[in-house]
Structure formats: C-alpha cells, structure tokens
Amino acid sequence: MKEKERTSVIKVSGVDFAYDRQKVLRNIEFEIYAGEFAAVIGPNGGGKSTLLKLLLGILEPDAGKIEIFGSSPLEVRNEIGYVPQNVDVNTGFPITVLDVVMMGNKNRHTGRRSLLDRMFPIRYNDIEKRCAYSTLEKVGMESFIDRKIGELSGGERQRVMIARALCAHPGLLILDEPTSNIDAKGQKRIYTLLEGLTPELTIFVVSHDLSAVTSYANKVIYVNRESYMHDLSEKPLSIETPEGEHFCEVEMMQMLGERR
Amino acid sequence: MMEIFTYDFMQNAMIAGILVSFCAGIVGSLIVVNRMVFLAGGIAHSSYGGIGMALYLGIPIFLGAGIFAALSALLIAWLTIEHRERIDSFIGLIWAVGMAIGVLFTDITPGYHSDLMSYLFGSILAVSKSDLYAMALLLAVILLLVHRYYREILAVSYDSQYASLRGIPSRLVYTMLLLGAAMTVVVSIKVVGLILVIALMTIPTYIAERVTRSLYSMMIVSGILAAIFTLCGLLASYIFDLTSGASIILVSATGLMVYFVVSAIYRRILYSTEE
Ligand SMILES: Nc1ncnc2c1ncn2[C@@H]1O[C@H](COP(=O)(O)OP(=O)(O)OP(=O)(O)O)[C@@H](O)[C@H]1O
Ligand SMILES: [Mg+2]
Image (cartoon, chains in turn yellow, orange):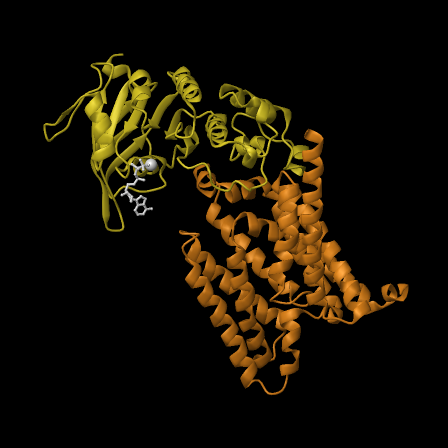
C-alpha cells in the first residue's frame, strides 16, 4: 500500500494521561490505517487498557490529540466495536447469549423495529435473530444462542463478547486481551477469525501472546508508559526504543515479565 | 372466615398488597441485578428522617418520606455513580444520619410516638383510598418506563460501560433506578414498613433470579411471588392477629425455605435419573 492512498483510522499524537496523580501514559504517538491488524503489547500496568479507554472516549487525554476516522472518539462511537478485558462480571445475571449479542444494537443493520416489535421488547424479530446468529456463527457459538450467559465457560463467554462487538458492524474493532481465557485451539480460531475480518475491518488488539502477535499482526505497538511502534511488514519483530535499547522477540518476552 | 374479603379495609389491604408487591418485585429485580441492595437499604432507612420531619411539621407522611427518600436517592446516585463498589461507608452514613434525624424530630414532636412502629413495620389495615391511588400511579409509571426502555435498562444493568459506549445514557438509567427504589420504599411504608421493605424487594427476587433466564421474566416472577407472599402474610396476620409487615416477611422467608427444599429434591431426582 502506498502511503497516500491509506486512510487513517487511529491517529494518536502526543497523548499524555494520568489517573489522579499517577502518570500512566506519556507522549504516545502512532497511526493505524484502514485494514491493518495492529497489536498492543507491554507489561502489566504498562497502560494498555488505559490507552484503549482513551481511544474509546471513556477517558480524556490530558494533552495531545486522538482522532478516530478523523473525528473525536465519541463522535464515531457507533463505528467502534469493543471487547473488554474482564468479561467474568455478573455471572448470575439472568440473560441469554442472544440478549448479550444484541445489546446496545442501534437498529443500524437490523432495520427499525415495527410497532408490534416494540410492544414486546423482550422478543427479537427475525432480522435481529439472523444478525445475532450469523455473528455467533463467526465465533463458533451459534448453538449457544439461547443459553444463559452465566452457564458458559470463561472462554465461551469471551467469544460471545466478540460476537457482541461484531454485531454492530463496526469499522474498527478494539479488543483487550480477547484470548486470555481461551484454550490453544480456540486462540488460533479467534486470531484466524480476526485476520479474516481484515482488511474490511481494522483490528486493534491488546495481547500478551507474542507468537500470535508476530504471526497475525502487521503492526505492533509496545506500550510501557511510553509507546514504541513497529511495522512488522517491514522487518520481523524487534523494537528500538528511544533509549537505544534493541529487543528481539525473546528479549521482548522476558521484558514483558520484568520491566515496569 | 370468608367474611374478611367483604370488609372494606381488608379489600384495600389486599389491593395495596398486590400493587406494592409488583412495584417491589420489578424494582427489586433491578436493584438486585445492579447490586444496589445496600444502596436501597440506605435510602429506605434514611427516609425515616422524612417521616420524623413530616410528623413535626404536620405535613402528610407520604410527602415527607417521599421528598426525603428522593433526595437521599439523588445524593447516593451522585456519590456512587463513578465508583459503584467503593462507597459502603457513605451509604452507612446516610443510613444512620437519616434515622437519627427521624428520631430527633419525633423526640421534639409532642405526643404521637405510638405510631412510630407502624412506619417501621407497616400497618396495612390502615391503607386509605388515596394511598391506593398513589400505589397504582407508581406501578403504572414503573411498568411504562421499564417496558419502554427495557433493552436500555438491560444493557446498563448487565454492562454499564459497554452500554455507555453504545450511547445509552447509563448515568440517567442508574439515577432513575435509585429514584424508583426510593418511591417503592415510600409506597411500601404502610404495607410492610421501612425496615422490612428491603426483604420484600429481595426474597422473591432471589428465587426469581434462579428460575428465569431473562431480566424481564425475573421481574414478572418476582412480582407474582411477592404478591403471593404478601396475600398469604396478610391472611396469616388477620387470622393470628399479628403485625402484617412481619408476617408478610416471615411468609416470604418460609417461601424461600420451601424453594431451597424443592430445588434440592429436584436436583436429587435429576442426579438419580442421570445414572
Ligand atoms: N481507574 C484507575 N485509577 C487509578 N489508576 C489506575 C486506574 N486504572 C489503571 N490504573 C493504573 O494505571 C496503570 C496502567 O493500568 P492499565 O490497566 O492501563 O494497564 P495494562 O497495561 O492494561 O495492564 P494489564 O496487562 O495488567 O491489563 C496501572 O499502574 C494501574 O494501577
Ligand atoms: Mg489491561
């Protein structure tokens, strides 16, 4: 791809962020283009989830600018799909997989609900059901559609959350460690699924799984208070930090465990 | 024994019991799934301050308690909206201060102290026609709002952060839930009283949450169970001459025990047929 044809999906320039007093992110800079598969890596507490919350507009940067599809995150929130890091909350909640997948769906792709439909908010019409079914099929969870979400395993629940994000047909999909509860086979399946969604969709995923990152992502952003971006399509994973440090994959692996 | 159904006060009591049960069942379900039981408890107890003030000022109890409960709901909403979990001590404070205000005002009000217990534990036989109108109005408003905004409420209750991201005003929904709890508490004062209302909002709900697979059916089942418990409790209180609120709650607790026993037996049967 030539530089000028590419449309910018995420553009982060000079972003600082601090919780109350604790400085978490400093001078974050990177740009992601349409159709890219970008992965964020870094140690626990490095600020990855915080970065995602900034991209989603849940948090506001103290300095610098974030543009998603050229606008502020809140203006384009219908274009952003999000899979949160912790999906194990509220397991006793009486809610089915179908309810979860359809959650917050704004009729954009399922049409307006008729008056009759609206009189029965608990029922989903055929278009909605089909939409939910086909996204669940993508993550291999279609047979669970009527199950109570609390009766699912952690990994199954995580796949439902991915389906929920896809159901809104976003242009950008942001995932926070989507495979942390998923077995090896399931992980491969999720990453293959995500890869198959590009280039129509731009993927931005936080992951601790370096082998998945190197085999699927074309861009890596290393976040540990500061950010370093690396383009995998140009050379294999090795990151040069401003302090002149140079990491190859193995060192990176160690660093993920040690550096804080 | 059938003659009790012909008494006016008994008919009022039963209608009130049913109306309040459905309010408590629906709002209680939402309170439970949103993990706001403790917050609702704080609102219920602090509204005792409103009762004390109303007694002192000579204004209607419903009005005093209503304003006080609504204000403490707004205060709690404002305090907890950012951090839903880390707020225990604030709620405890509102809880205790509200009750203290109530006690102080009743102290400086001449006479009147004999009625106090009835606000804490209910006096369903004293329900008037205008009380019934207030209860029916609240139930109608709750039904309307919950039905119209069911999907939004469901999304906020299950995952409020995600709901906000999808553009659902989760803070507004959260505040409305607390206000709904406050109003339910106020209309329940006569039926079960301030102290027992939380039990009416949580015991039927506990059972309903386990036997249903959607929030919607949980609310309906809670309402029906609450109504059954309330009517049985009312009957028991009439026959054995007991305080209505207390017997309603004890009937509910008995219902809960029955549920435990039945579900244990059911699991046994399921287990033995699998072999
Ligand atoms: N709500 C918050 N208030 C205050 N500090 C916070 C908050 N959330 C996170 N932090 C702090 O900010 C830092 C970055 O946290 P963040 O969750 O972004 O890390 P992370 O890179 O996602 O880590 P992990 O790999 O464990 O998910 C941590 O030191 C954390 O303690
Ligand atoms: Mg994180």
